[in-house]
Structure formats: C-alpha cells, structure tokens
Image 1 (cartoon, rainbow, N blue to C red):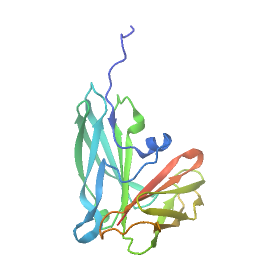
Image 2 (image 1 turned 180 degrees about the horizontal axis):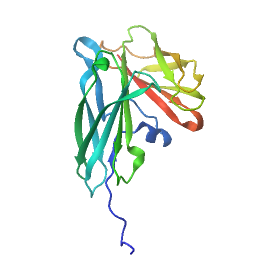
Image 3 (image 1 turned 90 degrees about the vertical axis):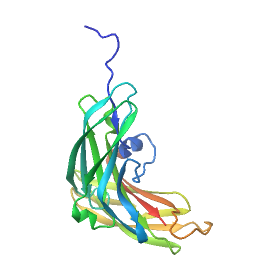
Image 4 (image 1 turned 60 degrees about the vertical axis):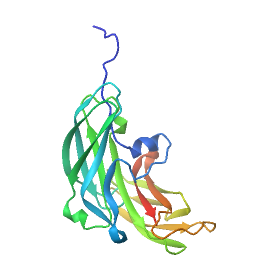
Length: 234
C-alpha cells in the first residue's frame, strides 16, 4: 500500500567534522557539542573529570527516542587509537537538544589534552552523515614570535596510506606542518612538527587572551578524513 507521504523520521545529530570536510567546509576540533578539555584556573590546560555531549534533533516534527550515544577517548593526535569510555541513551524532542555527561577515565584526567569521539546511533535516523563528532583541543602559549610543537600522526586504516597534513590558521596566526605528508603502514605513526607563528603585522594582544586558532587536518587517500586537532593560541 502506498503511503500518501514518506514517514516522518527523527534526525539525531552532532557537530560532524567529516560531514563538513566532505562538503568542502573547513571543520574545527574545538567543537561546540563536546566539552572535555578546558583552560583551568591559574592558566593550566587539562582534561575535566566529567565531560558533556550535546545531542541535537534536527527534525521539526518527530522526537528522537532512545538515541544511543557512544563515547570514546584517545591520546591527543591524529588517528591515535580510541578506547570506549561510555555508552548512554537520551531522548530529544523536535528541534531540541539534550546534554548528557559521562565520567572521564583517570588516566586522561591527568593529561593536558586528549581526544573525545562521540557516535550517535538510532534505528530510524533520517540522516546518518551527522552522527559522529570529535573534540581534540590543545592550548599554546605564544609569548614569542613563533613556537613549534610535536603532533602524533597515526594511520588507523587497514592499508598503507599517505596522510596529507593541512594547517588552517585564523586570527593573527600562520602555521605550517613539517613534513606536510607522511607515508605510513597500517597502525604506524610519525611525529610532525607544527610551527605556529604570529603574523608580522599582528597587533599586540593582552596576555591570556585567545589570539586565534590553528587546526591541523589529516587527509588520506581519496580525500578521506583521517582526523584533526585544533590548537587555541594564547
């Protein structure tokens, strides 16, 4: 029997770096929908003991009931191994969002930064392209003209790959990766130097005020997104 119109379905969603990347938009790993890394009092960065995730429902007509929210964590870097840390459920009304919390394992809570990766699952989701998002955020004190930090880059794929590294800077900043690409066997990793500089014409800024952000994106064969990180620069 033909229905007069398609059934109305929910659309559970989260800020999705992969969806933005495939659409040609530059994503950030300073996501608005995950909060686990913070600039603590006394200006010390670190991972919180409790993280929160914001789950949206983009449907204007249908509730998303019992959305599965799977959270994983990893060491800070691109393509670093992930481990499950929480599996939760939430329900979200039409054009609404819900915020849920989960505890962070102690080993990550002792670090200055980490990766948090969230996947949403629902049996009648109308759009599965916006179901996965990550936060991988670090802070850099730029009290000189430039600073260089090391970034772990790993190939998580089952086959060898050349991973291209793209640096995107905003505010008063520029950034480069050396080398700009790495050829890695499955599960292998390399260290890459990320040099972050202040533009010569940049005006002076107050201490402990964010100058801008630098995002490093790892891209594999066929423009596939391997992962990324964002540095907030103070």
